[in-house]
Amino acid sequence: MTLPTESRVSQFSPIGFNVLAWTAAMSDKLNPIAERLKTIGYDGVECFIDNSDVAAYQQFGAHLQQLGLQSTCVMVVGPDTNPVSDSAKIREQAVDFLKGAIDRAHAMNATVICGPMHSAFATFSRREPQPDEYAHSADVLHAAGEYAKQANIVLAPEALNRFECYLCNTMEQLANLVRMADHPNVRAMFDTHHANMEEKQFPKAIQTIAPVLAHVHISENDRGTPGDGHIPWDDTFQTLAEINYTGWMTIEAFTRNDIDFANSINVWREYNDPWDIAENGLTFIKTMQAKFVS
Image 1 (cartoon, rainbow, N blue to C red):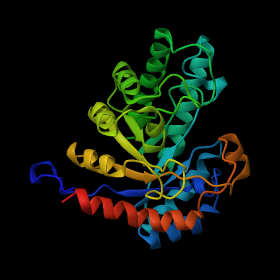
Image 2 (image 1 turned 135 degrees about the vertical axis):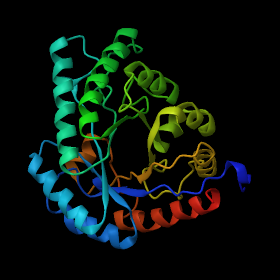
Image 3 (image 1 turned 180 degrees about the vertical axis):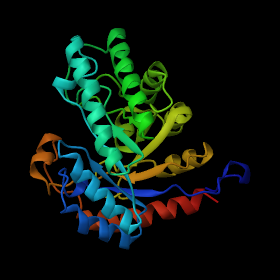
Image 4 (image 1 turned 90 degrees about the vertical axis):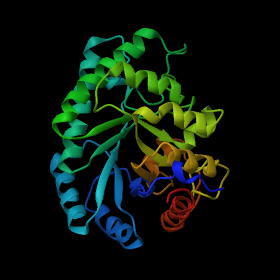
C-alpha cells in the first residue's frame, strides 16, 4: 500500500546495527565488526554500555569516526541502581550510574542512549506499578537528562515486555513517564519486539509515542532477521512515515555469541547468523523505506 503524497516524507532514517549480536563487551574486537558493517552499508552502530574505562569508548569512537560511522548506545540498570527504589541512596546511585553511562557515550561521540533505564531490568515488586515509583523514576530521568544535555545526548527510555519489566510495558505508560520527567533530553524509544507482545495495534502505539519518539529498534518477534517473522512491518513503516519520523532505525537482534549476555536475557538458541541478519536486515529496511518514504 502506498501512502498519499501528503503523508510521505522525503528523508530516509539512518540505519544502525546493534553489536550485541556479537558481544556486550567494549573492546577493540568490535573494530572489524564495525568495518564490515560500514562495508555492508550501515550508517552507524549501537553498542552496550558496560563498566569499561571511558578510554575504551573514546578509542572505539575514534575508530568509528575514521570509518565515517555514527553511534548510539543501549544500557540497562540493575537493583543497586534502580530508579524506582524506595531507597533515596539507591536512587542517587541510579543518577550516578546514568551519568557514568553518559560519559562513556559522549566519549564515543554517541548521540542517543536507549534502553530500560527507567527501572531495574527483570526486577519485580510483585505488584502493579505505583504512583511513587513513576515519580521516583521521573526524578532520576530528569536529573540524568540535565547531565545529558551538556553532552548533547538524548536519553530514550524503552518499554519492555511484561516478562522483563513492570513499570513500562506500553507506549502509553512510557509517554506518561517521559512527560513526568519533563526534560528535552529525555524522550522515548519504540521497539517492535516488545510492542508485538504488549500493544494491541502498532499504528496507535506509534502515534501515542510520536510526540517524544527519538529512537526505534527494528526487531523481529523471535529476535532474528527483520522481515522473517510476523511483526506487522507495513503498519510500522507506514505509521513512522506518517508521523515524519527521521531518527535512527536500528536493528536489535540476539544470538548466543556472547554466552553470558545471552544467558542474562534468556536467549537459549540461535535465530540466525549475525551477518545474515545484518545483510538481509539492511536490505529489508531499505526496501520498506522505499515503499513508504518518498
